[in-house]
Image 1: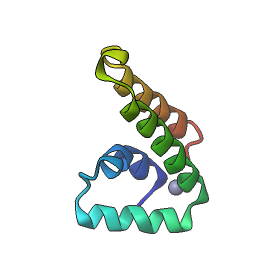
Image 2: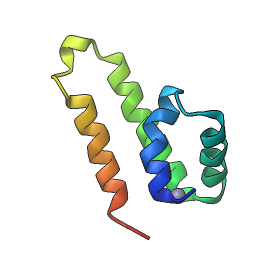
Image 3: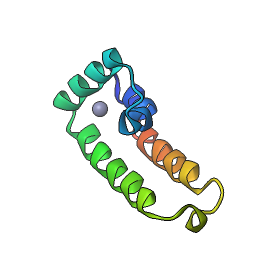
Amino acid sequence: MTCKELVELITDYLEGTLPPSDRKRFREHLMVCPECRIYLVQMRRIVGALGRLTEEAIPEGTREDLLQAFRDWRRRPER
Ligand SMILES: [Zn+2]
């Protein structure tokens, strides 16, 4: 798995909807890639913070916007 793949699968991973085979590859990449481990921690924090807000406190589309913003942020240092 590449960093780009991991970023694309991270929301599925956090939501627990990633198939077991991808989950295994996801974890294997985390073991060899400190950058993605940091990224995962930051994503967990954001998803966790959003989960604590009530639905009416989250404007339409905000969650997706935030997740998209983080995907874009991670894509910048392409390798
Ligand atoms: Zn990585």
